[in-house]
Amino acid sequence: MNSRRGFIKQMFGATGGLLLHSSAEAALSPFVSQGFLDDSLTDTPFTEDEGYWAWVRQSYNVSPNLINLNNGGVSSSPKATQDALDNYNRFCNEAPSYYMWRVLDQNREPLRQNLALLAGCSPDEIAINRNTTEGLNSIIFGLNLKSGDEVVLSKYDYPNMMNAWKQREKRDGIVLRWIDLNLPSENEEEIVSSYLNAFTSQTKVVHITHLINWCGQIVPVRKIAEEAHKRGIAVIVDGAHSFGLIDFKIPDLGADYFATSLHKFLGAPFGSGMMYVRKEKIKDVWALLSAEKPDGSDIRKFENLGTRSFASEMAIGYSLDFHNVLTTARKQKRLFYLKNYWIEKVMSLPEIILNTSLKAEFGCAIGHIGIKGMKGVDIANRLYTDYKVHVVAITYEKLDGIRVTPNVYNTIQEMDKLVASIKEIIKKP
Image (tube, rainbow, N blue to C red; front, side, top):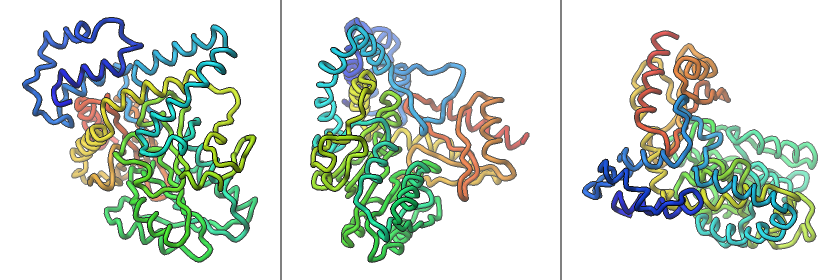
């Protein structure tokens, strides 16, 4: 949609079925009267048009008293998803065993198909679960690896994944080959070489984090995967922070196995996730939980979770609709813009330690900075206590500072307050 009016109408169409009871035209009338939907603004870029994003903000429950800039941990769901979740919960409670098992359980297939469209793969390669940890643990513990087999991974991977591999090391005698990364990096070849130099004739698996949660570094997964496949090495990709934020299709990465948390940048209900296994690889991974055919070739063997929150699962579709209106490309450009906006206003200060790239191919929404002479936890505490700005302290490996992650409902004014707060903290540490 090129026009402001068309964009908002499309948004209402995607999110209004459950949330709104008036017609789109009636609901839009206050915006029309204020000139908010002026079609003369058709040439204004979406990325920097605060009018578009102000309307998007109204689709969320945003606290007026706290600026939430820790969307990398978990993101808010749009109002339509929250309403759907409430309605599905009430629906299930009318007759739980009937509506859960005989009605909503059958709706997983349409949801699977819609997720597969966004992921760019076959529905028979998608399993719906609760988070990245569950998806990647299913793969890590399900692969047929024996004593002496080597796995290459990074010190900057997510702790739950590293611990899963350490458990296999302790239990099965596999060998873990750890690589270090010089972050932030704007040298693809250097990153790729770090992985390639760790490969040996015994390497069976390489584990890659697509977007590193600590500092927002984007890793050139495709290049590493191509080299890994030349050597017969399987590729596992942790896409917890990249799916729904970076504009890609899973097959573009060259991944054999992939998992993500839908409650991050897709904005689905908390505790919703998705895993991908390349079709011909499904039979090579044992189901983590009991399944009739644990070594079969049906992706659904990974969904035997027992009783689950069907309400949360079905409400994923509303977040998916909302996301498809915004589009991944627009979201990526907007959040890259917001990240660079605030960082560029503080990076020249002599006290600032920058741990994030400002180039689009190496970073997006997540920004990490340190302040000389201060610990990350102290910066985060000051931001919250004095200014009611919520970020997260990240002290890990060579990093010690704060991670700032805006979302589509955050405004330029909020970024300006963050900048002003950081400057005041530097003046009065």
